Structure formats: structure tokens, C-alpha cells
Length: 337
Length: 219
Image 1 (cartoon, rainbow over the protein chains, first blue to last red):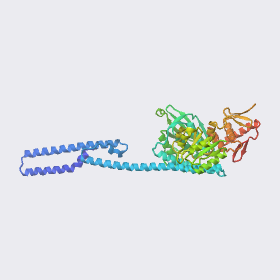
Image 2 (cartoon, rainbow over the protein chains, first blue to last red; image 1 turned 30 degrees about the vertical axis):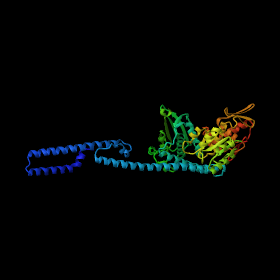
Image 3 (cartoon, each protein chain N blue to C red; image 1 turned 180 degrees about the vertical axis):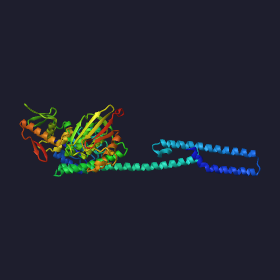
Image 4 (tube, one colour; image 1 turned 90 degrees about the vertical axis):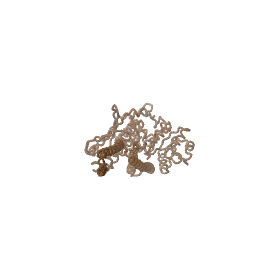
């Protein structure tokens, strides 16, 4: 609160006071009151007024200054009423009551949406679980009763499965629930599991998979990591180059403070202009638009899962040469304790 | 013959599972009700239990815990795609887990692996008059020894486990990839020809028969 602002605000009052005082002086003069009395009355009048005004300014200023200062420091501004001390003047009390009431209503509203989101998420999880049943039956049926279209049907089934997984992990990446379990996980196991899951798509396109130096354990959630690697594979499969025989290399290296998993393909690459944005939601970029069907969700989900797990993911690429993802698993003693 | 007890409440899935396992040479059994699953499993005395985690009345985890108090029969948990069920089920004493939807080849592989680990499948196998030594990677007869590479051994074992029946290329691929041997289609063909040549050299002609578009049979 600036004092000058306050004074400007009070200017009409001061003017009124001045006129009143002038009227009193004129009045007293008309009744031939002693000049000395007029002067002393004047001094007393203005001194008293100034004192009142100063006290008012002081307590307002201290209250509003603390309020704005705390507001600035607050991450969630709507919680300001919790941080405010009860002021000793009427207007301040009124303001506090209003703040408290709006805060409470805001919290209620917030809770309503949070509950709705949690319910929706629960429903999605249930739905994914439910849809996996007919999917399982279909997959088994195709296997048990092969027909000439078996491979094609299987491919479509895998697509459906991939899409439902995407929904599941999207729901998870958006909600801050603790449903991952960070445990010692073998990188090799996770990569093998992802490879076995995607084997048919990789084989169909004759993609060579070169896996080496994966003998590390990292602290992560194995299922999430499998999904992440699977997504990167799906991405590479989508953007293979027609000019050379496709290849995916996966390896890890140990640095003093972290273990880095490298995932590199020799596909069409990503243009420099698109590179910084590929982890953005629904960003498809040049590659996504030209020919290949792309939702722009896969890498966004990968990024948010990595963030949630505390891994750093980065990408490097050169058009028509390669795309390389690097996931860094911090060696944190805290986890191992 | 190994008997597998399937606890799965979705009838369509359950039926297909039975068909899959039967065609792979297992006997199957299912519970009559989901209220007394554990006594039923015990009465059936299977060599392996395939246990779904989401069941009506009693959850799969509860069944597993109860079962573990009375029996150490190998159990493979079937978990949903969500949550950290595996950790819990492995903690409860499951031998392995598999995620829905069932990848048939992976499922069969896991079942065979768990049975082998539990000693329900013979460790030292025989094919015709040859002794199969997986650890050494060799097939031996009195004075003949056929040395197989890791890949050839994996293929041979997979064929041997279903001797006389068709093994699909996908089943072979799954077994290889699951052992971190990420072979391409051509490499698989090459490996099979090499295996065939090695067997022929030792006097076993036409041991591996090709069924076009279906797979291979070890006779």
C-alpha cells in the first residue's frame, strides 16, 4: 500500500475538513473571538486530525503490506485467507471474512472437480481392464482357429491393445496419484519385455534390433518403463526410412551420477524446427503430417511418465539419419536407502 | 501329462484358454464356483495354476495367499494392465505373472518355463537316441556329439517340447526374443537350416519338417 495512493483517496475528506475548518474560523471571527483562541483551536484541530489519520494509515499499511507480500510468496493464491492474521479494523475484518468465504467455496469447487477427475480416472482404469477381456478372447481365438487373415487380425488387435494402453497411461500421467512402484528394475528385462511385445511389428518391417550393454539396474517402475520403451519402438516403427535397412539400437552407459539408456533408430529423423516441440501434447510436426498417421500423444505421455518417475528424457536427431532418445536414471542414494 | 488349473471368471476367455492349453498338450481344469476355489484346486492337484487377479467373491491375491499356506504348486498370476499387482503377487508367492491380453506364445513359454523350474518337466530330455544337454548346448549319443549354438539350441528345445506337433515361427521367435536373441526372419530361417544340416550330418535326415505357412515339426 502506497501512502500517496491513500492520501489521494482521502483527498475529498481532507477538502471537506478544510472547508469545515474555514467555516468555523469565519464563524468564530464573526463573533469576535480572540485571535489567540482561534489559532490554538486550529492547532488542536489539525493535530488531532493528523494523529487519527496517521494511526489509520499505519495499521492499514501494515495489514495490506503483509497481505500483498504473502500473496506474492504463495504458490496457490487462493489459500491467502489461511495466511492472514485477523486485522484490528473493521474494513480489514470484512475483507478477511470475504476472503475466507470465497476461499472455502473455491476449495469446495476444487474438490468437486478433483473428485470428478478421480472418478473418471477410476472409470477409465476399469474400462481398460474390461476391454482387455474381449481383446484377450479374440487374441486367443485367432491363435486357436487360424485363418488366412490371422496375421492381419492380429495386427489390428495389437493396434487396439496399443490404443487402450495409451488411454490408461494418459489417465495416469495426468493425475498425481501414487500408482507407480519404484523398485530396482533390470534395464535388460524391461527392454526384452518391450521387444517381445512388439516383436511382430518389428519383424513385419524387418527391423533389426541391436541390444547391448544393458546389464544395469535402475530405480523405476518396470511397467511404466516397458510402456515408455514400447512407445519409442512404436515411434521408430512409424518413421522408418525407406532408403536403408531399418535398425534400432538400444544400449546403456554408466556415468558417475546416472545411468543413461540410449534408444537410437536410423529412421527419417526429425526436422530441427520440430525437435523442441515433439514432447508437446498433440504436436504432430512435419513427419506426422506428411504421410504417417500421428496423434501427437505418444511422446507427450512418455515425457510426463518420465517426469513423474523423475527421469530426464532428451532427444537428438538429424533429418534422414537418426533419432536418438536418452533417458537418464539418476543414481540417487536416497532411493537405495 | 501336466494338468493346469485355470481360475478365470470371463467364460469366453476361459474357454479359449482351455483350447489353447489343450492343443499345446496340457490337461485343463476349471473351478465350478468361485467361492471354494482353494479346496477345488487342492482336490484337483494340478501341476500349475493360472490365476486371474480380478475375480468375483474372493480376489486372486487372497486365493494365492490361502493356497500358499497349504500347497507350493506353481502359480502364474494373470494381472490387469493397471496397478502394481505383480509386485504384490510375487510377494505373495506367485512364480510368475503375465499381463492381459494374453499373448498366446508368451503364455505358453512362461508356462513351460515355470513347469521346468518346478521340476515338472524333465531337465534332461531325450530325442530319439540322443541326450539333450541344454547347459552344454549339445546332443550326445555314445560316440557322436552334435554341438549347437545358443540359438539352435533354443529352437531345438522349442521343437522338442512339442515333438510331433507344429511349432509356429512366432513361437520360435518368441522363445528366441525372450532369451534376448533378437533374430530377424531371415536369420531364423538360416538357423533352422543350420540345425537341420547338423542333424543330417549326424545321420538324422529330415528330422525337422517344414509345413508351409504353418511352422515346423520335429519328428
